[in-house]
Image 1: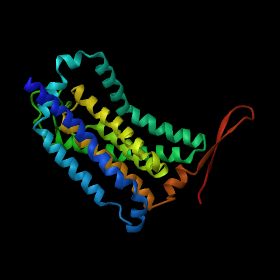
Image 2: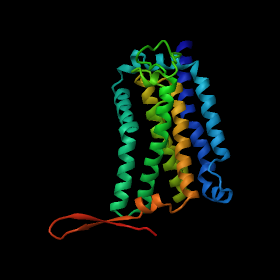
Image 3: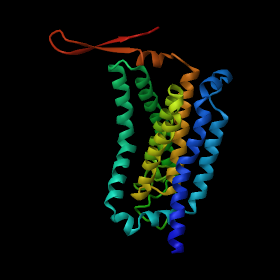
Image 4: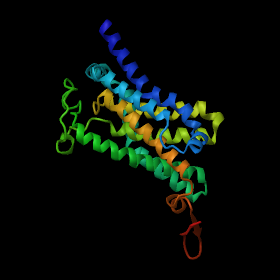
Length: 279
């Protein structure tokens, strides 16, 4: 009884650590436009808090990785059709769902002439590229063994093994990174555009990202510390992408990708005419 309670407590702590730091940080981050414009700084104190919380949370969970994985892989939990289905769904949401969502928002926004939706999709795609590049580098360097290879050995790190050995790309979680990258962009932009709804929107988007992270632990694709590290990397990447563009409005990049206006023509068929605004 006591062992089960301790294991479930560890899982609850994992869920809290995955979600708490980004959500807590989003309140000051939502006020970033004015503060950032005034200071002209790409990096803020909020970033330091998120980075510090990510490091502390990751280190704290290293000792609990095996216990949390054992509980997630418990026969009762694995027999649940609901949990298996939910894990598959959120696993897809993490990848390729985040890419599909980002490109879909951008494309729909351009076709429907909805600039906010197009910008949200573009910023999400940029955050995916930035966070994905960093995550892949860390995966290769850390060379951590995935739990589905051996659930009893969460301490198997081998420098550089992630570049050459299959199954040694566990740290950090790419799915968690992608989910939190998109979530942080969405939470920041939506809080700026709809401040009165931010109390609902921020927990909603980060809650979805947290479920993506937990699904990776449930499926033994990652250790708990992997997903916490990914959550922090993704969150910081999204915040920095949004902040960079607020410091550099109407860049050439944006003038091309957000200044293109598709027009459907009906003369002997249907086509698209793209007008690029260069000013």
